[in-house]
Amino acid sequence: MTRFFSWLFSLLALAAFFALLLLFVWQSLPVLRAEGGSYVTENRWFFRQHQFGAAAMIYGSVVVSIIALMIAVPLGLGAAIGTAEYLPARLRWVAKAFMELLAGIPSVVYGLLGILLLRNWVYDGFVAFEPLSGDTLLTAGLLLSIMVLPTIVTLGDDALRAVSAKQRHAARGLGLTHAETILFITLPQAGKGLWAAILLGFGRAMGETIAVFLVVGRQDNQLPENLFSLSMLLEAGQTLTSKLGGAETNIAYGDPLHWAAITGLALLLLLITGLVTWLGSVFRRRSQDA
View 1: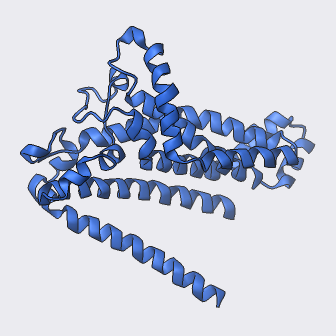
View 2: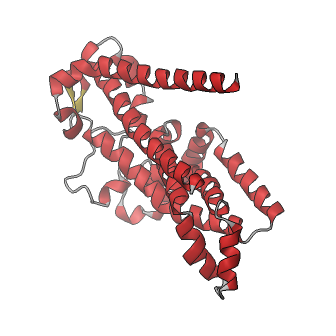
View 3: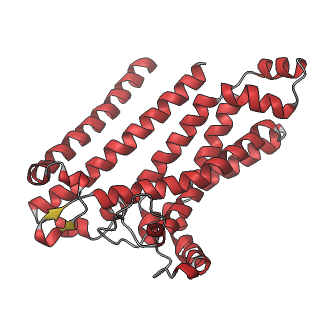
């Protein structure tokens, strides 16, 4: 009976996902017919003129997520190694409980802290570059790094603890120090699980809405000529989630083409986060089976 209900609810969840995917595809068809591939590649979003191109929002989502990972990955993996390899068992569980508590804090709380503290720090810290305000892509990326850190620490700790103690003892018996055992034995063995933690953290960063909405500036059509330009990081931008979380979603509902453009953004977000989360789950499952 347990197996039956497990399969039943798993199939229901899978059916709900594909139903949502098909709904977004169907709702997006008008803009896909009107814009074609330029809907993804062009930097033009002028809904009053019925011109829709999501490139700047895709760019914003990717940039803030990369900033978040560049900060959260070294900190998170370092913290995971510390909790898994050096802390006593009781302190390890206290640290994990604290990390999971941070993961459970509502996004709007992080967003309000970003408004009160982080955007002022960014503006004051980079005042020499004359930013217009503290609402920038960099601010959103820094805020996201704090939000994804608990995910990376918790999953990274699980991956490291999944490595057999026998391998650690064998390495120490062969003369390796504790640090060498971690570097040459534990980390390679936990590699798939650590990649899963990073990918799931990336999926969390891509899908975050409220916190990013409050600090990113929400400026349309902000796409640099050089995608690797650092100057754009200190300017306001737009992400897929900040656009979907804004007032334009309500404005679009009465206009079929505009609504199709908005649901197209939701489709892009669903596909990107779904792919990243699936890859993270695959790596995590393989690490647990190894």
